[in-house]
Image 1 (spheres, rainbow, N blue to C red):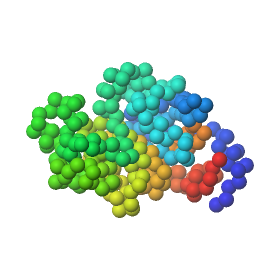
Image 2: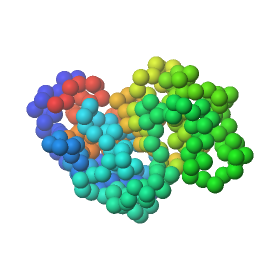
Image 3: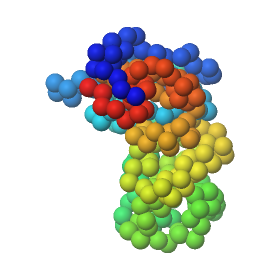
Image 4: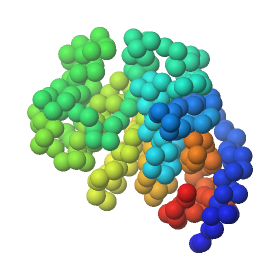
Length: 268
């Protein structure tokens, strides 16, 4: 499909196409504005994350997808706007108060972000030892449960350097969910993975969702993967949400901008 620049300019200048959300919001962003120097990243970004869903976030390079995640967990402070979680605007919290929020909103980094000098077991034990009063026996049981879930039973004594990239990402996912958070933020989890390990990670995301019943945001460039696991799709453009709808509706969209984006055409 060929879309002229004029057609796209007309389309993206229209109000955002955001379908009404069905369900209870677990986290809400309201008119988020964020700039880095002269670069405007978010210009009134607003959406609700619905309890129990996986929301996939698309957007071209430099549109601030990962910044959205970091803002949702307090690693970035917006210039203005609100982020409401459990009735609290987290943009106004201190760093100590944000520690409590991060027990309920977990961030999965692209590379797993494991501690290089710690074994798999120690990596998984660390958040439990720091933030819970579980006994050593309870911690041990939780770790074994997580390793069973991610398909890495028997890897307790391995160091991250001895794991493949896909295995490191699965351990990173296990560490993120071991505290049983309400919300999981996935930052490009399939980046750099071959098709086999991509599918294993997607299967893990679906198992986590089914087993834990938590809510997730999946920032990605990987459109097929997002279509496989997401309940809804958000597409960013020019610092705002251009489209937010169910996965099926986005697939069938007649919006020239959406069709061009999904076809991989350049959008200026």
